[in-house]
Image (tube, rainbow, N blue to C red; front, side, top):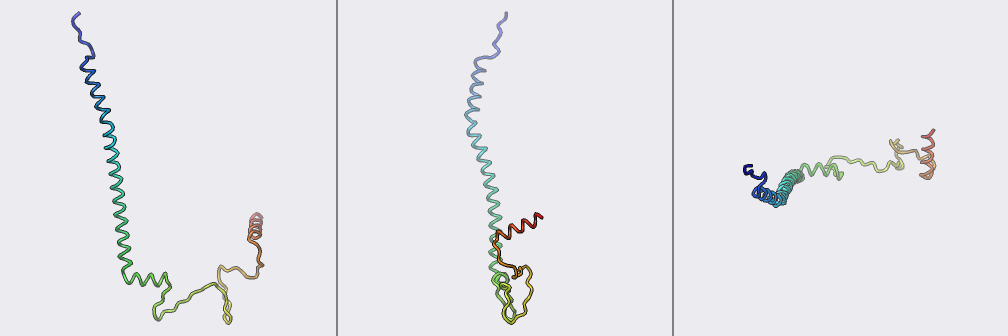
Length: 130
């Protein structure tokens, strides 16, 4: 028999162990690097959303500094009236003495006797049940 060389030499085993040790050593920093990149991408998306929100708020601030917008909001929300205009407010639908009674939609007849709420509930359930 001629001198056969072994299939796995000591150098090959040593090289394999060193490569494995190097891979295990670099696994933690590589994982941290990838997580940092993902966090960086998330922060960039959050920054873009905040920039968009800032633009919206700045546009609203600019709109609210406009005198025409302030006048329109005062007229609509605060019931302000310009000179020469007439403001009519319907308070509660009660008839003032001397006025003709008007039928107000959505107001129940006042002829019904006062019943407790639970009796009205039971009566409506019985009516719905048939």
